[in-house]
Length: 78
Ligand code: SF4
Ligand code: F3S
Image (cartoon, rainbow, N blue to C red; front, side, top):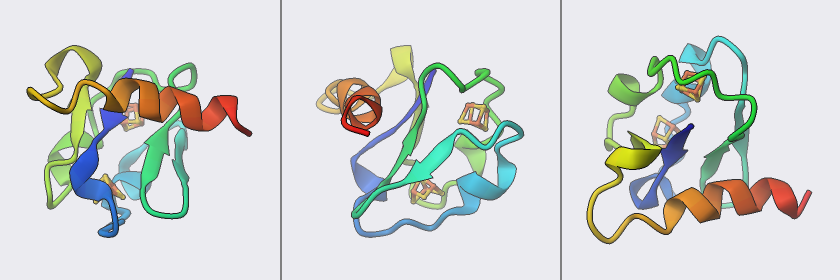
């Protein structure tokens, strides 16, 4: 799955939502989240985020690895 990380917080540009072919990016209070089972790993969202918040799960930068669990955990709470 792709993952949205820290730089989305309080930015919420939403360009990623427009690009996603399966509508698997959902809005929370302070950031957006990718549904890990609905994401088809197409990568379309990644280049359009102006703050480079989106990464493939294995490519999260140092210090941002926890955002995989942050994304998946959002859906556990629904
Ligand atoms: Fe949507 Fe593709 Fe991004 Fe996954 S990688 S969130 S399917 S645009
Ligand atoms: Fe957030 Fe970037 Fe999407 S700021 S809402 S991940 S385009």
